[in-house]
Image 1 (tube, rainbow, N blue to C red):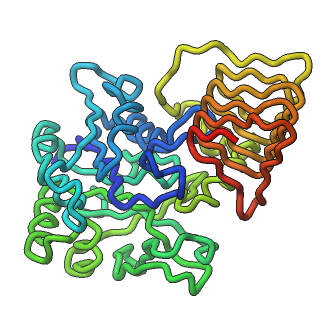
Image 2: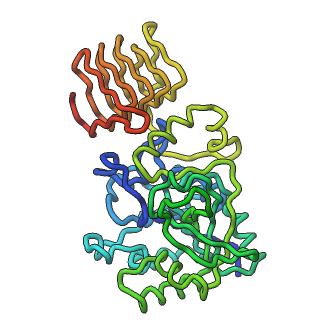
Image 3: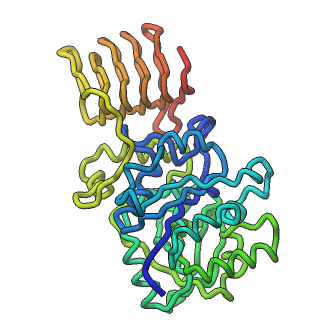
Length: 373
């Protein structure tokens, strides 16, 4: 069997982030001022020489297609590369039937067109750096038809409940998969990254069809774990975070303002590709004070910004104060307003002079997209 891999960014098991995912899928949520969350998984694939990539989308395809467009930022060869949103329209609004199994079945043409030997499934909400070519080499060396990536985690009680845990024996066989119930702190957690050969995928699809019309790929792997012979591959990369709750999104975004930590995720020689916008650089007025922050292009900063992340075209008027907050694109903070420990969605306007929007690190405040306060 050859080495060609088709990548599938699987959004069918994506968590929700409260108001941030009311009008968009998690994969297209803004991150670190200039990226979308899915950019990191897409870039891992591109940097691993995977040039045929599908995004399995259960819903909210408008935000996905707007960000991905024709796939230009992630296409290494315009003739042979493809980045495609894959959507199961017949089952999109049928609870239970809207699964990755049915999505793959509906878009089987994409796998055929790719002529790939292996299929790589990866989520968009697990931030990590990984060369998937090493995963393929490991799978071939072990003679594995299916390989699942896991990591040793010592804060499982802080993870979102329901995340998948695995047991691994001395021969790296995955012997059991089960949900995280939050009853212990240490264990092996699946990253949601699975590499399988094409014939194994055929087998999984057949097992899903014979087991339940509601089964997902993961349901098949959990139910038939031992008989399928799934190998484990321990992740040893420099950085891994699960963006599975709103509080995790807030915490893990701001922690990357630390340059040493950020260099673990965004490394020289491993570029993170994203959609670019033709906007001017940020403008910093003489009245501004900016410390320890990430400021996107197009911003106008006249006030104070400390330990915060600002998306494109944010306006901070003179006398306004932003601290420990995430302000998404197109928002405006008027003179005299103060924003602390908060997340403001796109196109918000804080126009009331003297208004204080304040949450806590454990429970950040949130202002919905387009709101005027």
